[in-house]
Image (cartoon, rainbow, N blue to C red; front, side):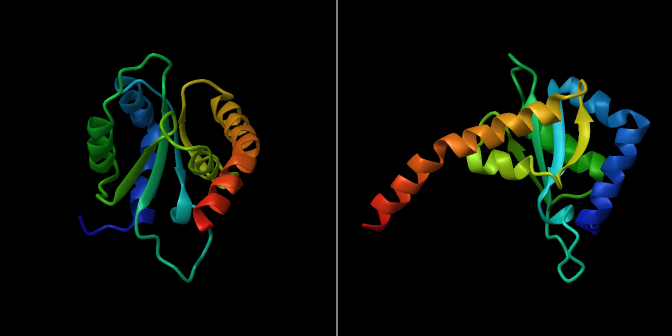
Length: 140
C-alpha cells in the first residue's frame, strides 16, 4: 500500500462519519477508538511514519486484537498501523495515547474518552513516585 499515514487517517475519519467504523468497532466489541501520536501532531517538518491507534474494549469483551488490527489496516488502506489496547497498556502509554491532541474516531457512548483520560492521568500521577524510585534503583 503506497499511502501515507495522513491518508490512512483521512480514510478512517471518512468511515467514522459514514458510520462504517462504528459497525467495525461493534463487531470487535470496541467501546473507544482514538488516533494519537505523530499523525495528529501538527508538525510540518516530519512525515508520520505510522498510524498510532488505541482502543478500549467493552467490559467483558473477549477481544481479537489481530483481527481488529487487520480490519483497521484494510479499512484505512494503510498497513503501518500500531494498535494499543488501553486495557493492557501501562499508565504512561495510556495517558499519552489519551492526550488532548488525540482524535476520537469511535466512542460507543458520549463521555467514554473523557472518563478514560481522567483515569489514565490519575493513575499516571499516583504511580509516578514508584516509577521514579524504579528509575533510581535501575541507575544505581
